[in-house]
Image (cartoon, rainbow, N blue to C red; front, side, top):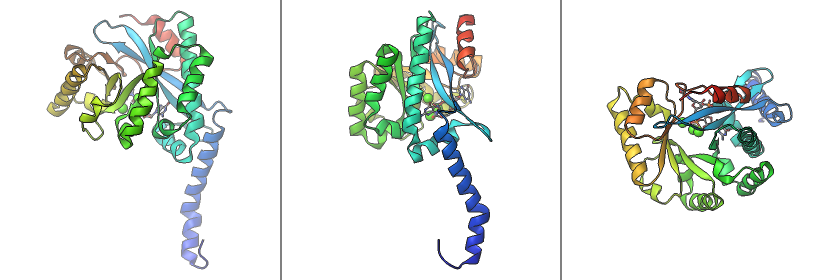
Length: 278
Ligand code: C2E
Ligand code: CA
Ligand code: CA
Ligand code: CA
């Protein structure tokens, strides 16, 4: 820091220092999070719209901060990304989701796949494929049961290397979904190049599919385009029966959202699955 500048010093002490401290503190807590069992995965059911069949679930990470309580992933994922801690946590997420899914499958729950979110730093990490392969081997889960969710903007950062990594996933038999579809650059030509299996329509569009002409147009166009390209479509953020019916009637393949269930911890999810009636 610069010498002198008394006001500068005091400003640092009062505001920036406190902010930097809490950020450092949060980083340290996140770093210790795995050992201290402060990370938890919750699971949200995914339903096939025509058959009403339960297909699988998306895993979503939660962090219980010792002082601040439950923190949103929207807040802590960026910190994990900035610090690189996401690599370690990301491996824990994949291992935990895959292991949990295999346990349920072995127990006879009729589930086809588990979807896991990957962030940009994870996707660019050169050990990603090995750690995914290792998680599958350790748990004994078949690769076809794992689906990875990657955002559109992440894939567009470096399309050549993205295509390469996606091909390797495909060769392994892992399914890939483009998450938050429609919120990115909306240049559609790249879709042809990406070997992916499905598109997930972002909940910001689903919110308006009953009343907003633009959201209706985008949603219907996405469903038709996905099918024309041989991809399946899932809608997230489905909260009402009207939204569910609209999506089903317009050919959307799958849906998830509060209409069916909030994301649930593993005990609640198992119970939900057993009690689910089509
Ligand atoms: P996302 O992947 O787009 O996940 C969907 C978000 O919508 C989740 O928020 C989910 O809880 C929420 N949601 C589910 N159903 C509804 C609904 O009917 N209405 C509304 N309004 N929201 C619904 P969440 O769990 O807070 O996660 C936020 C974001 O954090 C995720 O967005 C994803 O980008 C990131 N994230 C979550 N878990 C992970 C993870 O394990 N790894 C990575 N890399 N990112 C994650
Ligand atoms: Ca997702
Ligand atoms: Ca989304
Ligand atoms: Ca997202």
